[in-house]
Image 1 (tube, rainbow, N blue to C red):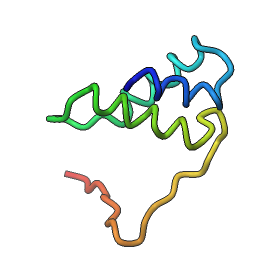
Image 2: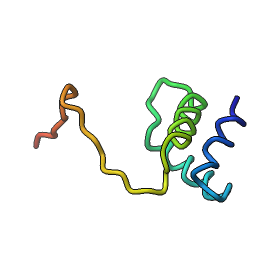
Image 3: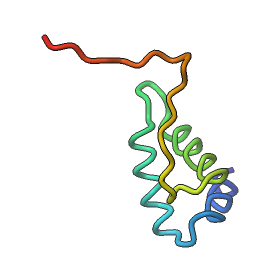
Amino acid sequence: MRSDLVFGALSHVSNRYQLCQLASKATRKLHKPNTRLQDTTNEVLERFHSTNPGSAAPAQIHADQPVETRRAA
């Protein structure tokens, strides 16, 4: 349930308002077209439960995923 995800995420964020702000920003950045917004929000809250969303973690690039580059037209 969503309430369980919220309470789990509150273990790393002390303020509910701050949790809502961080979750909305993360949901906007992680949302993929043709997927439900609710699923993306649940995924964000699950990530917040396992890690601290306030800490600055470096972005990890996996070697098996190709990095897209833009070319000039």
